[in-house]
Every structure is written in C-alpha cells, then in structure tokens.
Amino acid sequence: MSIYTTQYDVIVVGGGHAGSEAAAAAANLGAHTLLITMSLQNIAQMSCNPAMGGIAKGQIVREIDALGGYSAIITDNTAIQFKMLNKSKGPAMWSPRAQSDRMRFAEAWREQLENIPTLDMFQDSVNGLLFDGNKIIGVKTALGIQIKSKTVIVTAGTFLNGLIHIGEKTFGGGRAGESASTGITEDLVDKGFESGRMKTGTPPRVDARSLDFSKMIEQPGDENPAKFSYLPSTKPLQQQRSCYMTYTSLEVHDELREGFDRSPMFNGRIQSTGPRYCPSIEDKIDRFSTKDRHQIFVEPEGWKTTEIYVNGFSTSLPDDIQDKALRKVAGFENVKFLRYGYAIEYDYFQPTQLKHSLETKLIENLFFAGQINGTTGYEEAGAQGLMAGINAAKKVQGKSPFILKRNEAYIGVLIDDLITKGTEEPYRMFTSRAEYRTLLRQDNADLRLTPLGYEIGLASKERLDRVEEKQNKTDSFVQFLKTTSVKPININPILESVNSAIISQPMKLFKIASRPQIDFSDLRKLDSVSSFIKDNLIDAEVIEQTEVHVKYSGYIEKEKNNADKLNRLENVSIPASFDFNIMKSVSIEAKQKLTKIRPTTIAQASRISGVSPSDVSILLVYMGR
Image (cartoon, rainbow, N blue to C red; front, side, top):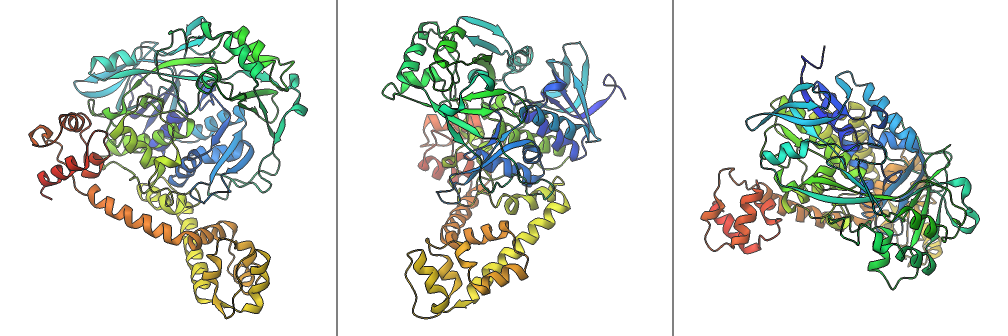
C-alpha cells in the first residue's frame, strides 16, 4: 500500500515519548496507524536528562505499564541505575527512578514499534493539517505529500516554531541539531485555537574523561534494585553505574552573573514562561540570592559513552560564560564540553481547549498529547500519548472514550488538571497535586489499572492473570495475619529489639504488624509467618502490598470514602448544550470559565479556577439536584 492512496485510521505527528506511546497504543488496539517523524533515528529521544521516573513521575510510568504501554519495559531493558526515592516517608511518596542509557533507550523504542504489524513509520516533517470543515482529514508534509486519516494526534514536543537561545545567539530548532516545525500552529490558529509560548532549557553535556570524580560525592543505585514493569520478562539490574554530586559556589555564581546582561532570560529576548520547578542555574542564583551553593548532579548517559549530563546546570547563558563558570565547580576544573546548554522557546496550546479524551473541542478527530498541551517531562508526555492513542483508536471504532478519574490514576489527575485549570507555565506532576495519593501508589498501579487496560484490549491476559494472583495472595496474607495469634514468649524478644511495647497475652499478628516500629522482616523471624510465606509462594511484591495494607488501612479506607463522595458529583452530568449564562447569582468569572471550558460533570466544574462552592451549588439546582 502507498501512503498516497492509504487512508489511515490514526496518524501520529511526532516520534517523541508522547508520539511513541500514542502510536503503539492505537496500533495495538487494531487501528491502522502511521507515525510520522522528522528523524527515525531519534524516536523517543531523551532530549533532556537521561532518566525516567522520580517523584510522582515514577508512579505515572508504572501506570503506563499497568495499562499496557511500553515506557516501563523500555526503561527496565535500558537502565544503568535504579533508585526508589522517598523510602524514608510513607508508601504514598515512594517513587521509582531509573537512569537510562540514552542511545539504547531510543534504539529499544524503535525496535518495539517496528514489531507492531499495524504500525507504519515515515520520515518527513508535517507542515500542515487537512480539514473538511471542522473535521481533520489528514496531514500535509514538507515533501508536499497529502496523507489522509480518520484521526490525527499531534505530539510535536518543542518543535512548533522552536527557537534556540545560547546567550546572544538565536536560531530555529526543535532541539540541538534538528530543525523546527512550522505550519501546524498557523493552521490551528486559523481554525480559532488559542496558542502561547513556553520555554524550557537543558544543561551542558561534558566528557567524563575530563572530570575529577574524587572531588565529588558518589551516588550509587539501590543495593537491591527494583524495576518499573510488573511483567516478569524484565529483570532488576545486576550491575549499576554510579552518579555523582557536587556543588556550585559563590565563585561560580560570580562568574555566571558576569553574563546576566547577555542572558536572553534577563535582557528580554525570552518572554515566555519556563518551568518553575526546574529553573535554570541563572534563575536559581537570581531568585535564591542568599544561597551560597546549589547541587549539581553528574549523570552518565549510558554504559559505554563518556558523555555526562550536568543536571542542575540548565542554562541559556553565553557559551564562554558557561565554560568559565563550570570550570569553577569542584571536579570540573579541566572540563571538556561536548555540547553547551541552551534554552528553547516553542508553541503550545492552552489545554482547556481539549476534552478529557484529549480530542480538541474545535476540531473533531484531532487529538493533542505532550508538550503541545503545556506539560514538561517524558513521563507526562508518555501518559498523554497513551491516552490519546487509546481514544483515537476508540473514536475510529465507534466506541466511548477511555477516561481515568482522579481517584484512579495520576494520569487522571494530570489530564483533569490540564483540561479544567489550564496552565500558564510548563506543567509538572507532583504527589501534592493528587488529593488521593494514598490510593495512587506506585506499588498498586497494576491492581488499579490492569483490569481496565485488559477491558479495553491493551493489557494482555498475562498481565491480568498476574494481577489476580497478586490480589488473591495479598488477601490471603492479610486474612492469615487477622486470624493468627502470637504468644508473648515468641514475639516479645522481637518487640524489645525495636523498642516496641511488649505484650502480656496472645495477640493477633495483624495488630502487631500495624505497629510503626515493626516491619515485615521482623515478622518473618516467627516460624508461623515464615512457613506461611514459603508454603504459599509469597513474593516480595505481595509482602510489600500486604504491609502497606496493614499499616495504612485506616488512611486508605478514609480516602476511598472521600473518593466515593466525589464520584457522586462525577456522575452528575452537565448537558453539552447547557447555557451557563442563564444562571442567576453566579459570578461573571464563573460563567465565563464554565462557558470556555465546558465541563461535562459537576465535579469537573468544581475544580475550575474561579468557580466557587456557591456557584457549584447553584449549578446543582439547575441540574435538578
């Protein structure tokens, strides 16, 4: 078949993290899919740091995996280091993170995509969209080829009218060494879309052979590393590469300030908004002028390369200033640069213009995913790509959209935040954004989402069987703890060793296990517990799941009850044709926001900035409640 004559079910524009997950999801659901990218060599390229996961982001990667996406599998197969962050806090805060081999990561993604029979790939730049009234019908490429499709997903990353800044030097580009994409923004604005500009930045890359690691603090991976994917086909790392940490100093800050008058961030050439939670080094020095040092994380980019990512030194300062300042950092005295840091400005579209399916409200069958929606991060992009790919395929197949609620997944929180609140700065996920984070843990993403992924046809039967086995074994272990008693003579030595109050009469193991001083490694010293674990083939995942259930059951139950109350409002629909302007005693701001965003339920309306509780009460009256 020829792309000139084929009408695809789904065309995905852009081969980054959003585009790769979108193309895989749509194709795996049976949609004939075409992925168009400017460079087949750079599919799922890690444009910034060579890592996946982190605070809240790690939960998202596990959710993608549970639903049947590929980000976790690719990460496990190409990782060079694994860490579980926040282990000193409660399990709702535990967040997996892995350093990846940048080149192997992109290679593994391409191999994965090439193994999907219903997915085609084509190298070209899309510079126009084809419409029939208010419907998308295809795309136009730089070669002048028109390719028809029933749906289109735009995942353009930072390429839409991308502009790179290094000091006084400015040039067009989507990232270093690659040209920007033009035409798409203009076509969308002509159709009435509201666009804006955002900024992000990246630090220098340097040669490891020029660094003195003896002057830095080693940051090894976990002693017993876990992994991202719930599938047994990926294995924990047996060998890891260390990262390192060093610090800036007042001397470094003085060198950097020398270039502030030539910085595009300070001289007005960059006017767009950058990520508040990942500021450039010059921004940190300006905003936190009382701090005499900032952390620098020295991260290897792979197993065999000497390339190092200088995390914490993101900058758009002139190259000569970068050179002089970085040489003042401990361990970097003789540094050799491979690439200078730069800032990039690009177009995005206010996400309030989307439905929760990620289909645009103005143009039917057109979906957006990734940085085009104002987000930042591979994980946020991959999650949106997965959901857009699922929903584009379902739209073609005449099925209802797949939408996750806020109490079901961080992915649900991410998309709901974007659609109901919009964003004026690059949106990054944090655990604090999720009001039900005790429910949305990294350890239970499979229990939460794999049944849903299987139901829509994306998660495999193997995944579902593993989830059901894990749930059954967890339930069995919890029941064993609730029904089994332990005598003082057997448990008191263990209690004394951890400074926990001894008991004077037999007590159920569940009550002992719920004590904060006790962990399950202590309980395994009891013959009854050890035998149960061995006889029932209880693995580490089930033990962790059981321990979380026992220690946090009260919190979990409370959050479930709160979520159930909220979901009652999620079930109160607002008709698509409802005129918000007819409501009396509602503020003008609320009417304007409701009319612009057009929430589909009362709960969504309640989360819109500018809509007060009293406005929601009046809206409930109009809905007959």
